[in-house]
Length: 342
Image (tube, rainbow, N blue to C red; front, side):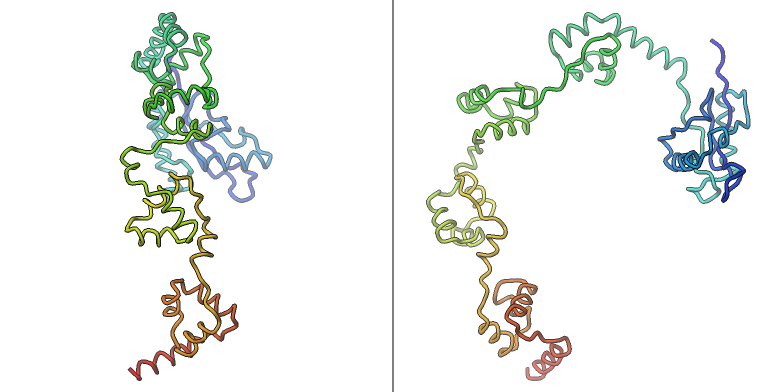
């Protein structure tokens, strides 16, 4: 096999460029027509400069130049590193090159590696019947076949493509199981979601989606069912008396999550955020606000604590009732006078 020779090339702004004529902005090593390659996905800075120059009407022959030729790969790497060091890199603030590294990386595949790849492909070709049996007859997944051959699933898919074996499409959740079948497994046989997921070779979340799509109620844990609150008591407190979840917690000495889970279990419709806020916050009358803020001369923070709301809500109430809001200077004077009286 003939030896592969490499070269060192540079990318520079054309001599007719208005801002940076003949300025070198990239150094690289390559072979064949590498120096004329327009696509450089690994280097976004280089790609951006090339795109701008090509858009302005320049061609790659105006930008790319070979400076050293007929080099072996180790020597080419050394020359690349040396030249990058001399010219300096922009990301290190030592020069104008947009090279992201010091060079010397990205070696071509050795003959030994190529031989290994060829042997693995030949091994797969020799075992065509075995692969066909695993994938078509036994319907094993790519991952399971990969474990048998100690390779990745991507390698197995390449083998199948090279051997013209049609790869199965990933099944959609809709086509995995019918409503009757899932009812048989989950409702009648009372199997767990974990067991069903293993049988169907899907995730537990996919099983949960199938159950929700078919309007099949999901079972709660046996240990949680013992602590579920009484339905009649919840309807009386939450729906009829219209207590908040927090107030129900204080009444029955429980926590918020316990009450909310009980409401979901009994399918009691919960109030939205806006409905809950309207119910929870009771706007005081104008006379009461005047008494608290103007007569008793309480601060907005103190008024908010009495009404169990935030300060912005009290501000809104004062503006709504057209009650004069004290300025900072008035509030400061009031605070000093109250401090002196104390």
